[in-house]
Length: 134
Length: 71
Image (tube, rainbow over all chains, first blue to last red; front, side):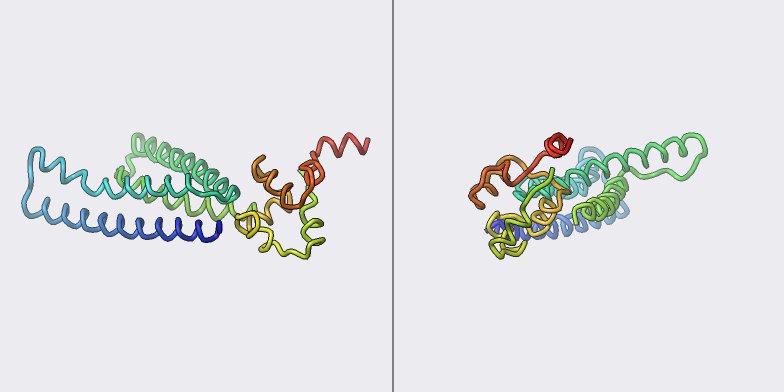
């Protein structure tokens, strides 16, 4: 029963992930096209600029809901620990990068790249933390 | 925390998968609890106790309790 519930929750989460990813790609493409061809200004420019952020926030919210609904204690613990490691690693990485940027003038790290960096750390952390419970 | 899950499971000829199904958790969770890598919550410990028809303290033993009885 738990297996079925977990599968349902996972497939729902996977579906949402696909939907948000498609929306992200569409919003990113739309922004690229509009800002290169039409040069929007004012409120419209602001609205269009934040558009790709909405699916990304949706992905995070959906993941949070998925984890909160997980009934398997070990899986939940693995994900929580991975999240903490990833948050720490991302903060550490961006702090180091920030100081390098300020004093050694390395290329500027776009804030929108923080999310993929965090995702990368989550993947590595999940793999390493899960191994402790095998 | 040590536990007697493996023995209790073997007595009933249950695989880790069988126990996982009865507990409504994943097989990995049963393995992690059985090998002492993860301490279950009280609700899950009670569920195990009910499933095996034994009090919690007959299934799980505190490490501190073990060291006290050994000395």
